[in-house]
Length: 394
Ligand code: SF4
Image 1 (tube, protein in one colour):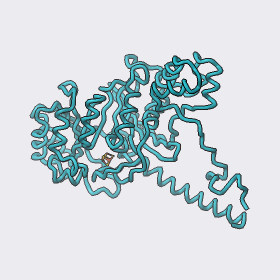
Image 2 (cartoon, protein in one colour):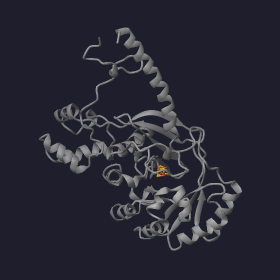
Image 3 (cartoon, protein in one colour):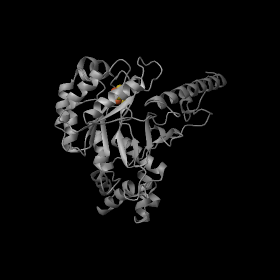
Image 4 (cartoon, helix red, strand yellow):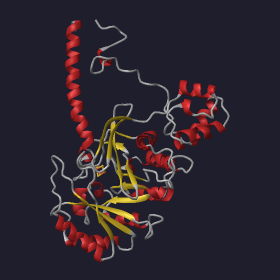
């Protein structure tokens, strides 16, 4: 018989006991009000909350013992009752071109992806808003992974904080050339199906007294959740990107099924009304180039008509095939011809460079890779359990 203290479920691969889950609340994700309530509950003066906020979000302290202007007694109390944990790293890869990708594991075992793309004039961190995605955009690899859960504000901010740790970016100011200058919400998930948490997280990320990445440097990319586009515009004023990918409803219903709920005309109205759009602050239209599907000259001209009067830039994305996908990438000459039509009309448009191709091709692939490894691990664990059960005569 197994003892009550250790059941078979408690064993990790290799036979060690799994660590007990840490019941202390994680402070990452708490805003000023949340920290003020915590400090009050602990019987400390209100100004301690400000100090704590500064240490966590501005200095990036990962241990209470490093918060040197807090009394030793308060630090000990914090250590006993709270923690400041980032997500764990399940997998990290670095491409020849400097692109870095992380598969992050949260406390409940769920995983999400994060990517850092360094360029000469900027460094962009691409973060996730959900584990999996409930939408099923036909060309998207992440869309094949069911939605598991929304990420919390702490899960989302934790990504940025972990990236700053990994890139040694805490001590840098924007002027001194921080490595992460921009953030894009273009990883796993539809951010506007998790709007409250995304907005809370971006308030923390953009706060000048904290992580201090300006709202204009944060781009929220949506497949077109019209009511929440208006809300984000009114309340936060982040930069906006729209995953458009098709210029008529019939095709967009197939490629980006949320279009059945919010068709192109409604989407265009919401974007036209987005506050703060100017020629120096344009909406980005993402347009994946699919051979023979959405890449004709006529499509390019329709796109121009749709964008009329909206300060816009177009990002043409060469499709990156993944196993089981039904599409092919447009030929380079076709993409150039599409681009030329946009340029001749005076539209700002670029072809997205493919980055990090040697470490993985598309969003969602790192997770799939880890699931394959996970399956091997599970089989090993099952074998180990069977062995133990046989040994104890179950
Ligand atoms: S493109 Fe975005 S919204 Fe569509 S399935 Fe992929 S992750 Fe989800």
